[in-house]
Image (cartoon, rainbow, N blue to C red; front, side, top):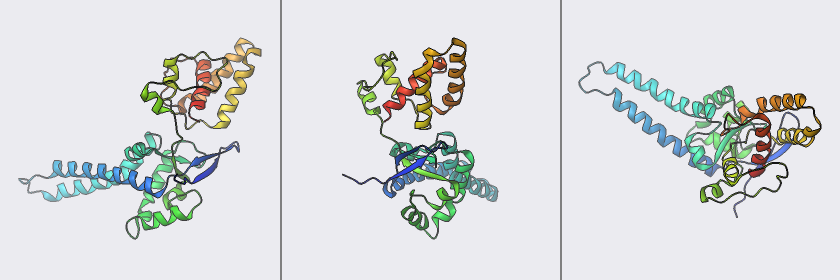
Length: 256
């Protein structure tokens, strides 16, 4: 059995939890996939800007140079910023960039870690980056250290059961009516940005909501849902807020 390094991250509330760190092998595989995709994009740009009948080759060369720079730096930045810390390579290898609290990487953090990638590449073949990953407690390259990010292996889910058509078993759902179809849908929710502290607060509300007057109960549910719903991918927008909180607690349970 392969040994997987783990690290303990802490939420702003001081709650600690362990996540598996991405190793050099998986990071290399993800980087190779991304590099191939970037090379394909550059070759496409070269084909589009190359014209043997155009005497103004300097302009085409300048455009290609700018495009290469944008693809080299922009691809990683855009994917990590807007695809919740995952490039195509990271998605295929089960990796994700998160902040030091385990939450989504910010636009600023993604920009910093990718600009500082220049340092990690030096002197060649990512030697400085690999040395930094091996030496730091969170397995961070120089760019990660500067940005306050870490690359993790996504927590194992029961998504394979979803693909095979079986229904994940919940250890507790005394007050929540869930159909098999809903269970399968919950298995696809992306709840990595929801912390244990978040779920603890939600569960406290769900446990005492029956004692609240309807107005207070609705107000609290709306407040919690407004903060948590934007951090979850895959949620149908028409799910009522209190129902969303019920399902969120169960979705997080599935991801354990």
